[in-house]
Image (cartoon, rainbow, N blue to C red; front, side, top):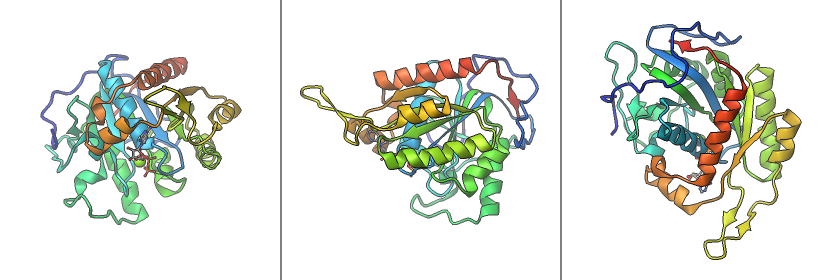
Length: 289
Ligand SMILES: Nc1ncnc2c1ncn2[C@@H]1O[C@H](COP(=O)(O)OP(=O)(O)OP(=O)(O)O)[C@@H](O)[C@H]1O
Ligand SMILES: [Mg+2]
């Protein structure tokens, strides 16, 4: 399942390619005729460990189950998680049309710095300029093929790498992952302000780890309190797209590289709301690479 793509390119099912690239201010696109992407969406938070990668992966898998062509760009260069969640490993090949992404069992195209290191536990220790070049390569130098959605798993923080992503990739919208703690809310607001300042459209919010459902009486236990997602989403004028419970089965699937098989009514509802938010944005043009 790992390594260079032998699978056929997934075909987009929405807007056909060929339209002019969006060229959002700040987006630096390298056009090399290797792909056509309808929607580029970042999933981030600013806060570490809130479930950005899990939420990105779950949303991507659910969109894929609905027959959409989906790519995943793991922008967390120093702490890549996406390959582990899908049981993927490198190396990647370049057959002359750009880097070939790895392909998950269900046909998602995945790119991550994890594929560039031989030892899974070896740290990626790169200075800013190299990271900037890598992010640019991960977008414009990859043979993405035709995608309905390219989801970007953002790293935590509001410094170098998120800034590079915002400035080099024409992002159509960003989804913000919260957990119910007040501290998380405060830090997510910083990331939301950063995105807004850099003209990245705010698409919606997700609250992860909202509650734990008792397996016996099915009572919902709010482990981390009531949370602030509703209030902050309202303040920024964006919808809450979904809430995900703390679920040991999700954690187990993530640990075993089978997150693509995890399904729930909450994830399905999140995908419904996400697609509605995209539709509410209006028609989009296609980014050609
Ligand atoms: N709703 C959930 N229920 C159970 N476990 C979860 C849930 N969401 C995330 N996890 C687990 O919590 C851990 C952190 O999640 P994840 O790696 O997605 O967070 P992150 O925000 O991407 O972290 P980082 O800031 O390091 O990138 C992982 O082990 C993941 O499997
Ligand atoms: Mg992560």
